Length: 91
Image 1 (tube, rainbow, N blue to C red):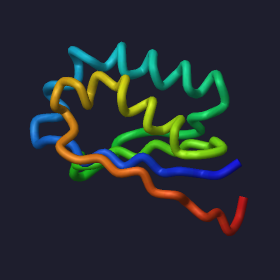
Image 2: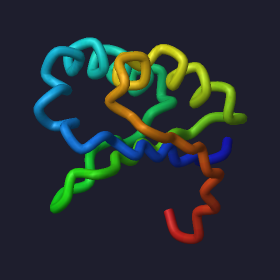
Image 3: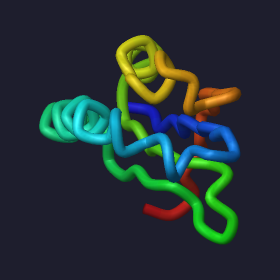
Image 4: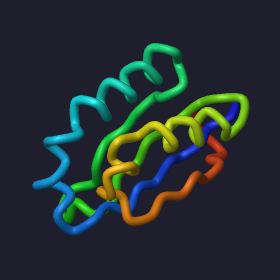
């Protein structure tokens, strides 16, 4: 299994706009967590300009599928996203 970071760069008014899509986004995240794919996730603070989600899966297709289904992406709350393989030194 490999680790992947999903990095969201969010729009300036992300905090005020996310409420309408938050439950759907969290439902998607909880389902991925229940399957053992999503380990951690959350927004960075001060400023809230990015969010980081940590996935563990055989390859990046699991993360790509999450992105395809995330209402934050579909509704323009994320201006840019990237998937980065993460090499863990200490676990």
